[in-house]
Length: 72
Image (tube, rainbow, N blue to C red; front, side):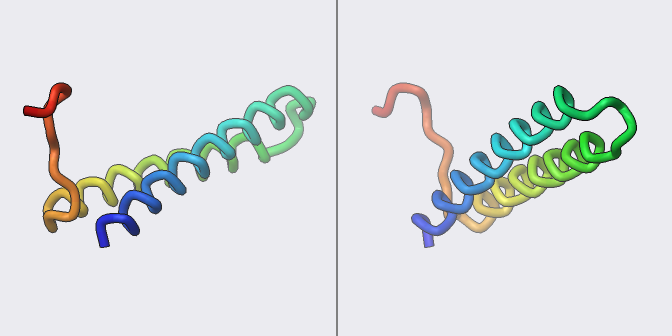
């Protein structure tokens, strides 16, 4: 289960980066008459919130554990 959570976190990060790139593309290519940039921003915010919820739930259920910068 731990590996599935890690893969989900990485997948969410890649999806957020993809959405960020797509938003940049729409920002540069649209002439201001399209809602594609706003929709991309909405998707990116939703993905970010879902990632925070996933990390919080994984911590609460004990799938991930915090650790220090330097392991002891």
